[in-house]
Image 1 (spheres, rainbow, N blue to C red):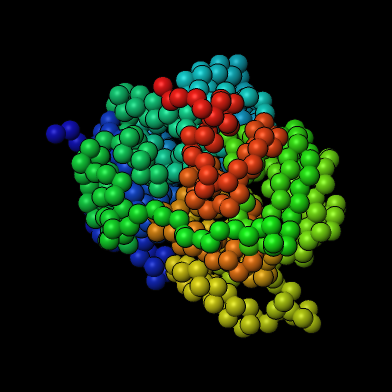
Image 2 (cartoon, rainbow, N blue to C red):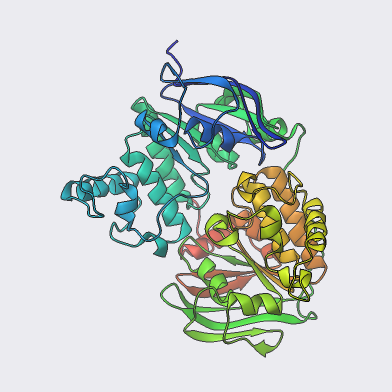
Length: 503
């Protein structure tokens, strides 16, 4: 047997009273694709961050490439050929795509790339099949394209071990297939990939072995060929569970008050002609391919991005001079797809993040009543099952799924009338998804309107009362998900006739 690329022994890590890793023992074989699965907070990302030097272990030992690890940091890990693609991307918005890819390893410094760097970029870009423009400012890219830049960064460093934390959460089906082909080539070249994901079907397709984690411990490691989605879920949760959507009564939108009417909205260059309606108690989905203008539509309605045409009405009143502050005052909340960059303040506590939109309600005379604020946040943490339930916890120590719940909580604190949800379950495990689905259905049952965008079409179909199809920035149709199929939606989004046959 060849020496493992990585060997962990009795590895432990704590965040305050929370035990993130508990005496973990694991070998990762050289030239393999090794999957890590588990619920949010199970310890997957923590293990990856210790391996790449982002976190320090509290106790235990680990060996990389046959060498015991002593002093370790991201720089030392990179020098040893270890790179990480994080779930929350770590890029520089003001730099170009190519500058981000080669940041710190440029042929030429002072912010200028040498001709050899440009040629290397084009080679990487073509090999990955991403079609990124090297001179485009990174901050102007969609989240999905920024994720591709992070992938190219790791490839540019010729890493011998790459930790990928939710690398496909914003990619299309074709792009996921491209990434899996790249991963297979890396393994064939003798490199090792640690693949952390909540998309269990992708883990089973891409990985040689899969380690399941629960509560900071290893449940088991087995060949991917011996596992199924159901067996992984059972191991993750300690009990059988299937992804199901909440049962809901037939919508009565025609009798309910119209909350939002969008007519021929235009926010160039991505939103060209979008129209839809949302009634009280109704969940409306916007279905479209990546780049269709779904997210940009939500941002234009909320006022985060400017619009240059069309009409938006809220509660039968024209809403022209839109802004996030004005939307908040009207009772409109928005959960963006990029929780780190747009949804949360990483330097604030859970309490600070969750009470931010409603802070004035705790300060009627200009001075914040901290005890009242603390009680309100603690109640929301209990209602949303956030772990840990400590109001002054550093938000950055929470798992992705618990951070997502905090984003829901901060808008629930204002008593919203309408929620705009952009990828509300991105990077969330199967158990947390069920909780989020139930929460969304319960809010709609209480009369709140929901506008939903998700890359998972099954999610849009399972939750929505009505679905509007968005293609190339335009509304191309409206349908009832109870009277259509996933194939029919995909055919229309790809511009195929609805009666086309799958080859």
